[in-house]
Length: 113
Length: 117
Image (cartoon, rainbow over all chains, first blue to last red; front, side):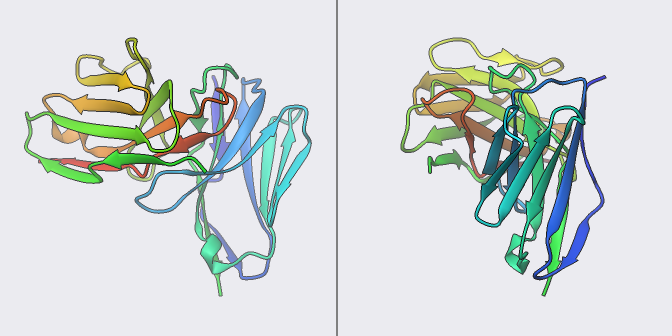
């Protein structure tokens, strides 16, 4: 069966450390994968998109990797801040051309001061 | 970045009534919008694809007669939950794709919290 999984357990880290979140998928061959941030009671906010031919992508303190062999994407936040506390969702488009996104269940990150 | 709004932000209604939720792209035209639903502690689940000028396409298990979608203009899609029941209580979120294309980012609205009593 097709699945996209994120660690459902909350991730608690100390301010200044690097947070690493994992997204694994099975039985998909997406052309790209996206990461979103969702705050409680709000809609998702787009962070990064990484294509299948890209190994790594960076945006300020954020870094995403995409390993199509392992079927895994890692999302890193360096020098984390309490304001980074939120739920982070990975998403993919199974058909790669319809825009219909399948989301993981999200990982909640808590950065402690 | 592109802005998508939703109205209302929250609504409480009695069982059996119908509720309309609006999704607007404020600074771009969106030929395609999507409607998602999110239950507490769960992820977003795609309900349907709203296409301007044509019928919406629904995901498996979503009742098209219960969740009516109208995409009458390039900036507005509406979702009507007909004869709402308590199990329809959820967080409804729309997204819009910019004219640059499907593989570009989707911009999500802030969501509408529906509570059916």
